[in-house]
Amino acid sequence: MKKRLTVAMFGQKRLTREGGVEIVVKELCTRMVQRGYQITCYNRSGHHVSGAEFDSNEKTEYPGIRQKSVLTIEKKVWQQ
Image 1 (spheres, rainbow, N blue to C red):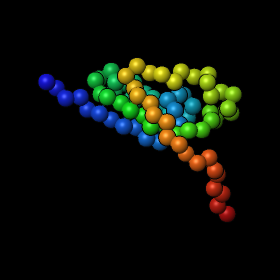
Image 2: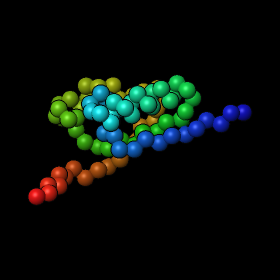
Image 3: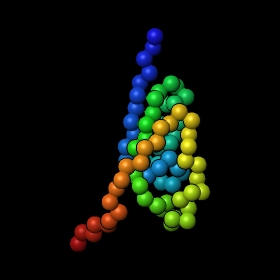
Image 4: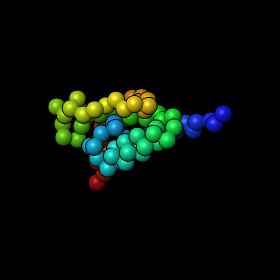
C-alpha cells in the first residue's frame, strides 16, 4: 500500500487570490491534493488587504485541503 505524504503550509493569510504568497500556496495546495497529498494550511488571522468588507467575498473551502486558523497579533511595528 502506498503511503500518502502529509504537508503543512504556514504563513499565508488565507487561500485566496489576495496576494503573492496566497496565490502560490493556493495553487500548490490544490495541485498537490490532486496528486494524492494530504494538505493542512495554517492561516493567519486578519482582514483582506482591500478592507474588512472583502473578507467573506472569496471562496474559503477547497476539497481535500484542511484549513486551520492561527491567532496573530495585529500590531504594526514601525522602525525609524
